[in-house]
Image (cartoon, rainbow, N blue to C red; front, side, top):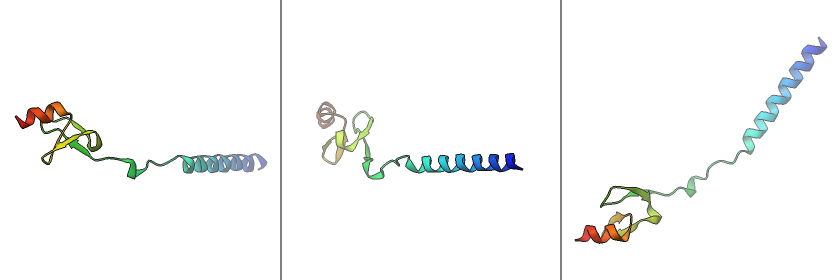
Length: 70
């Protein structure tokens, strides 16, 4: 009977440790994500902050922006 209680106590302690560890894992911040846009010239997807915008279109670089205008 004593061994059974000891095993139950160990299982409960392990369960509580695992549960508390899972709560400490940081969650990904949704606000840190950025919209992706597609280059109008080559079709590559890139973050909006890294793109070049001209005339309502997004480009992966100044070269593609200039080539698209011609």
